[in-house]
Image 1 (cartoon, rainbow, N blue to C red):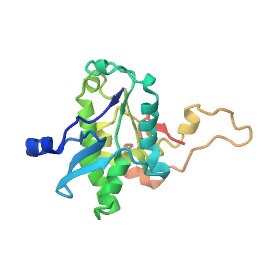
Image 2: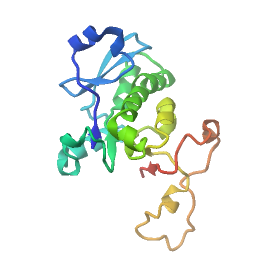
Image 3: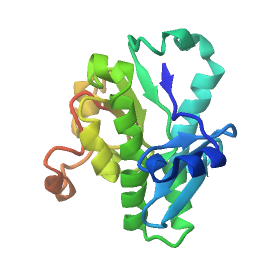
Amino acid sequence: AVLRPPATSEEGLLAAGVGARGRVWSDRGGRHIFWSRALQGWMWVSCDELVGWQYSIEWNLKQFLEQNPWLLAPSAAQDEGDFRMVVMEHCFSSVYFGLREQDLSHRDALAEADQAYMAPLARAHMVSASGQLFNGRNFVVASSFDLGRVDFIEASHIMSNWTVMSLNGDVDWLHSSGVFAIREPINEPGPCEEAGEWRFPFGGMEWQPQDVVLP
């Protein structure tokens, strides 16, 4: 199943007032809408634009699921929430780049995209029927940013039981996951990278054992 933000309109947001803040919404055009505390205003972000390079991972996954509807559970089953896998549709990259265009620094844009967009979206999924049933263990989310979970650390705490597909993860994942098609006959197996001091401040939150590394 794919879970999306609830639909609304500009008139609906105005009618809801402050009560609409702290959540992520969508409109008929496929844009995601959220209240930016840093900008003190609503942001409309298109999730249908190809950002390019590695940042298109979220877009590619969305397109793949839209082009293969046979993979999706019937909409009538949404209320029950008994799914083998639930993919969270999001466009974190587009949100980040939109905030950068508003003159936020790299770190400030990441923090705002995390706190005002990704974390509220994750919380909404956790209170859904499937979230209540499985506590997030069947939830999957893709990340296109270099550090994976670390780039949305607040949302990552909410997603502790989720499977995050990202460019970052366990340094031994390629070997320990057993995904080799052909075993290397010459070189000894080794880590994908050195552990690196950058991991230490995050206390293991940079990845979880169920996560998947995107090669």
